[in-house]
Image (cartoon, rainbow, N blue to C red):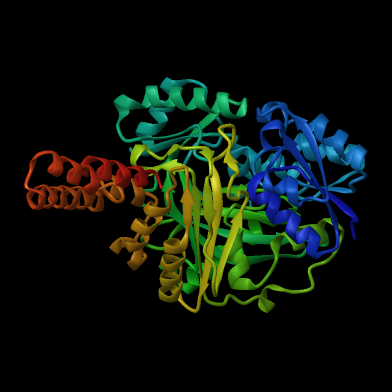
Length: 506
């Protein structure tokens, strides 16, 4: 077993990996940018090294600097977490050349699944069902428009590389296609350095359901059931749950078998996720494969009792999976809410800044994976995630009640968060019934009434009460100078209103 592992990431996922390493008796090495000098993952690691300025391009994405830390620290392996270099085949290859183990799949698997057009071709050969679309990237917008017309609108223009909703455009009308196509190309080039895009048929109102797979280097591969990731804003997931509330058992079995087949098609090793679109008739279509640990992996851990990070490390160390698909069971129901420093009332714009006070929830069946603390700052340079709040319940109703309770206990002061938004989603009839899809959040935001700012009604009542007491004091004092003194003693209603309004930012 490895004696020392470098964690090439930051935030909650770096903290998550460090904790599993410590439980395994493995020393951890953190890397950090100047902006993260006081970050929690730096404080928890056994060793920590600065790799550059705040910009990720000059720090967390610098392969040479990270490998320098490997040499300085004597780390034997690197865990990439998710994001940054986790799906960079050049990084995995550089690790091999430097004699350090990359805790993840081989470079060829990352390359095969990282480019979506190539992945589609591989999956088609493997017999995996695909959404109708172009096999190769298209450069000419007019040619792409003709293809889209043949498919029938709506269609989706998608970047061949990358993910996270970048370089992706839904197009409902032919007259909007050219602008959307060019916009997707520009965004993909800026985000991933690759402006290739392709066109596929848009599946109307689907669910986004993914399958967690785990494969060793000895030819064994299993799936760890599904996750429903349909609650999304800007094509990015914010709430996930397992099991999927509408997935029929026969479809679940078929989807799991297809996910294993997809992983085996590229000789996959480690933890990965095969993502699908599920329509209302239980038809499912391959979307993409993420060749890394997913943000939402904790809910799978909650229903299986497995530590996926531990298994990533053990597989990378050459261990064989000691169980088969028949040995794996799912127990209960789990939900994850991603807590962000963002403003849902302003198109979910990031709202980073210093956290003056933070108190997370606790109690039975509650897990919080966080990378911050009271007094910490959510930097402007990276994803503004505060934590992932995860709950487990005996069934879905139990899990929903537990998550509502946990959210009600969550207190963050000094910055705007999406905690209230999560509470609103969990109370929405469509979510409660499980009858939601990838368009749920846009529909909800369009149809809902904007909630009144917190404490506004209390503040207004306080102002009225203060004014009433002032008038009573003046009347009892008989007016004049004595009345003025009494008014000052009673306090200004407007001051009271201002004090209560100050609470709104909390």
